[in-house]
Image (cartoon, rainbow, N blue to C red; front, top):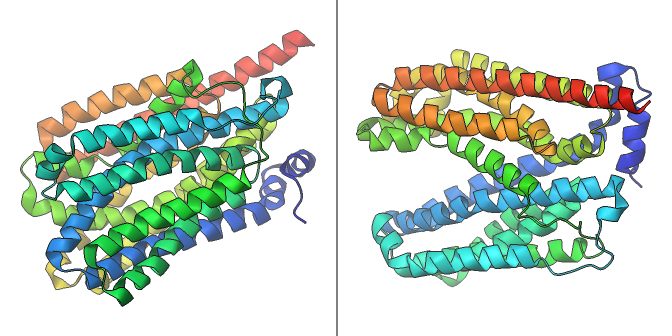
Length: 427
C-alpha cells in the first residue's frame, strides 16, 4: 500500500534538503507522470486516427467541435483548481468540511448554464467556426459533463489521491480511442467520432464520481474571493500561453499561421512537466502553507525541473530541428525548422512561470492574478502593434514572460517572509 501523502510530507521534513525531498516523492511523481504521458499520447493518437478516418471536410467539423470543448475545458480546469485548493485546505482545518456529502450543484449549475448558452448561440458559432449547428450542440452536451468531471477530480486531487485523479483523465482519453475504433467498425462517420468523445467523457464522469463519493466537501463554494482569484489565475495564464496563434491570424499573417502553429505544438510539449508537477504539488503546497522550508524546496524543485526541461528541448531543437520537422510534417513545413529555437526560447520563461503558478494558485494570490491581468493587456497592446512580424512578437512574448516570472518570485518571497513573521509573533 502506498504511503499516505501526509506521512510522506512529514517524512520529507527530516530528509536531507532538496535531494531528500525529491526522492521521497519520486514514486508518486512517477505514477502521475506516467498517466500524464499516456494521456498525451492517447490524445495524439485520437487526432491522427480521426484525421485518417474522416474526410478533410468532416475532420474540419470535428476540429470545430474540439475547439468548443477545449475552450470549456479552461473553465472546468479553473473549477478543478478551486476544489483542489479548498479540499486540501479542509484537511488541515476540519471545521471547513461539510458534515454531509452533497451533490456538486455549483459544477452542475455552471456546466448546464454554459452548455445552454452555447446551445442558444449555436447558429452564430456554427457560422463563425464554419461548421454545422448540430456539431456545436454536441459540444454543448459535453460542457456540463466536463464541469462535473472537474469537480470530482478536484476532490480526489485535493484529498491527496492525485494518481487516481490523473488516471481518470487518462482513461477518458484512452476510452475515446476505443470508442473511435468501434465507430470505424460500424461505419458511424463523423457522428460516431463525436459520439465517442461524448460517451468517453460520460463514462469517466461516472467513474470519477464513484471514486470521490466518500470525500467530504469543503464549506466554501467556488464563488468566493479566493475561488474567483484562482479562476483569474487559471484563465489569464491559459490565454497568455495560447493566444499567440490567434493574434497572428487576426494580424493577417495567414500564410505563417500554419507553420507557426506546427512549431508551438512541439514546443508546448514542454508544459507537460510543470503541468504534472501542478497536479502533484498543488494540494501539498496548500497543506504546507505554514512550512516555509518545505514550500521553498517545492518552489526550487519546480523551477529547476521546468527550466531544465525547457533548456533541454531548446538544445534538441537546435541540433535536430530540421530532421524533426521533416519526419513529423514533411517538406511542405521545412520553414518551420527556423522557428523552433526562437519559439522555444520565447516560451522558456512561461514554462518556468507555470511552475510558479502552482504556488500562486495554492495561496490564491491576488497579486499574482493582478500581474496576469496586466500581462494580458500588455500582450494585447504589443502583439497588435508588431504582428505580423513574428520575431518581434516572440521578443515581446519572452519579455512579458520574464517580467511575470520575476514578479511571481518576488510575491512568493514576500508571502514567505510574511508567514514567517506571523509564526514568530505567535511564539
